[in-house]
Amino acid sequence: QVQLVESGGGLVQAGGSLRLSCAASGRMFNNNQMGWYRQAPGKQRELVAYITSGGILNYPDYVKGRFTISRDNAKNTLYLQMNSLKREDTAVYYCRYRPIPYSSKDYWGSGTQVTVSS
Image 1 (tube, rainbow, N blue to C red):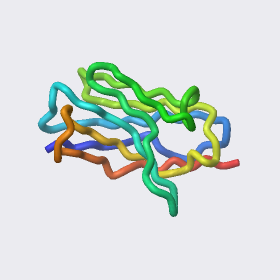
Image 2: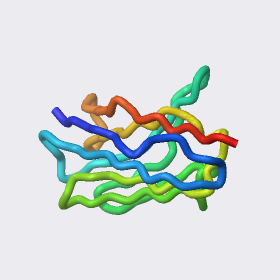
Image 3: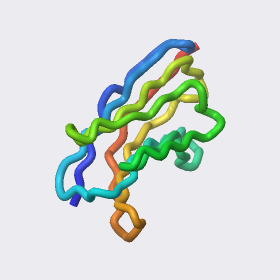
Image 4: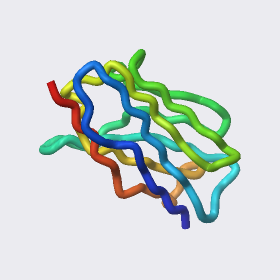
């Protein structure tokens, strides 16, 4: 089992920045993928960014150039630096951990709320 605890969410004005953290603990796997997802009210959960243990990154276009994902493997911690925040970034942000190759093992945190005001 892997436990994930997110922190760093809050209320910020449009154009501002926030940094999210996700602390992972438990039985970790050497090859893994960690990512951030978000879900706004009435919408499906969507990818924000992911990073593998080998350093492969992926950003969808709607956050590219504004968000940066990183990880500290020694601390088993994932980060998301969010700059130039927009109202449409308002959502609950979730941390996800998946061993590679993918399997039925798929772990999620409980989420942290990010609210961007105009």
